[in-house]
Image 1 (cartoon, one colour):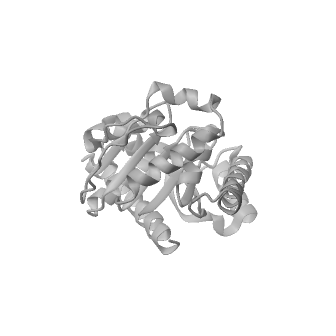
Image 2 (cartoon, one colour):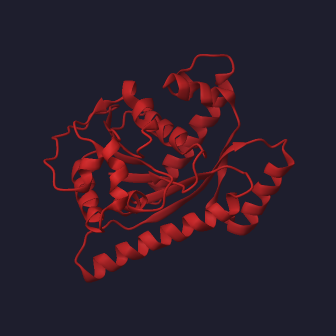
Length: 262
């Protein structure tokens, strides 16, 4: 099982768009996918509803003692653990919820080909729990004014979660998986905007190979597909053809990178 958290402490950076398309792409390749919406805004849950099978448990329940459902992975099927209102309360809980989440998630995902977690844009228990329970992190950003500072903050959170894992494994006999940073993924890029070109260049100079060489331009078809709750390649409009090619290429690159670093 390969696992990936898609996270950024900043909202509006196409985080949910990317992770839902990754799930659809993998299912289209015949892979079994466990998808967890760890964001109380529930955007991924509503987007994935018609393209997934309900797992019979809500995300907030993973943060405590619970009878886990018996999930049977199937090729091409996405099992969805949907976000719920109680998920917002997790930020007020103690550190024990991190252990509960990791144990429950790893038990449920063990036989799946892939585990994907959409992470709320808030640094706290929900983000740390996702990073602890998965093998890799992908951090989407947009090329706007605060992108560079945002990468630095996200990298600090990543390092903190990795240190927590290593410390728990070494001193407490925990079994947290090792963590890898796949990279920073640019979205909503408009090359004709001077500020976007400048930000992309500054990011490359500051973070080098951490900035992935694939990115998503600004496309109205992407928003249309999210509104329709379908992958952009299933939108079926003239304007969606180029966006579909770009999204599929990005998904393929990210999955190949995840597999190569496994």
